[in-house]
Image (cartoon, rainbow, N blue to C red; front, side, top):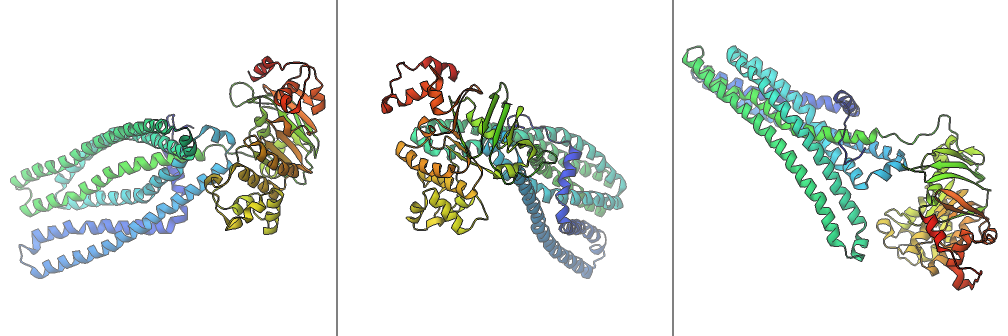
Length: 604
């Protein structure tokens, strides 16, 4: 599913059935809403009836008391209708809001269950459009749709019966014209549906563009590229304008065509009624009443015409909602067990993985004993981070297996697997809120003392105590009020609180300066104690004490061993990488010049 591809919504019966399910919790309110709508419709038919009585009886017979009584009755009924309309407007909209709330909850809950691959392919702004504006239009349809359809049907049937009591032949003439309106509306509605679907896509594109630009505003300012961002935004904005032009053109064609048909009804009745009056088949009172009463038929038709735009918005929004809801979620294998009391022994056995074309991981086999540290090094794009994502089952393996304590990760629940794995990444993500909120995210049921102890072990506690509000200090969106080192320590405190048996450090210090890296490394060394640790490292100084080092390139393990063993390999790639990084500061003279061609080879 992609916003840039043509949407293929569910078939109408299937879509309708799923839409109706959301009315279930609101059955009583919905029934009262429909009952109020019924009375509103019936009251709406009173005025023409009274008009008929006035013209044909009360006025000719000078029944002044009846005239006053009838007028007073109509006024009283209009007061009742006012109260009923208040009820329908308020509670009807609350039904729509309640359905919107449930849909949004369902959508958000489903998003939490979707695999990483879904978010790799879909921009945040486009997902937000479906959660917000799309569902708003759905809620409007949920309220006005049944109400408008119900009232219109009642009015059409009621008007037919009432107009027939005045003159059956004139009534049939009007209703014979109705199929013409239905055909014109059907042709125009198809064009309007296509145009509104395209407008939805461009709205999502604009939201994605805005979300991306605002999130990266500091980068934009740093590189003084505001003009480029404006240019990119204007592209989406122009596409939106063009999509709106097409949708409003289709809508204008629909409304102007259908309005012309309804106007033609009045002309038909004007001419036909005039001919019937001329021929003496009806009297002047009946003719006048019929001209006034024909609006009983035209009014619901007009309502239905106006409803079509809302229907298109709502149905398109609900179809887009279902596109995400129908995305298959992550599912545990049948009979999956809970992974408890983890020791941390990891076996990676001949695994293969691909995001699409070509394997990113191509036959890697590794073993990490519990409590030991494995370091992964090698060129960017070699598969190190992907391997780290496969251990907590963020992506499904193509071939091979990963076992923790001898149990295949595919045979355990994802929740229990990930509960026992802690991850510290280079790009730290912090939630908007307080320092307390972000540390407690590691274990929501932790005590205050446990949280503070985790902060101390991450070497962030002393800094927090310098703040006026301490742990209740706001950190800004994604921790914008903190330095890089402070954000990293906060993420380390979060993992300390989680206390996992397995730890993954994915270039956790590569974005920091040397001084900050040394300080953070102390916290990481403390975090690694007693845990099985996998470290992805760019700076080889951080992994010399690893129990084993694996050099990964092209999705394969190229070299493997301890630091000393790898340094002993003549012309080994690890030895060349190490010498290239440290020959000046360590004063190493190995008697050879690093072979840069080897690095070029493994980079490709």
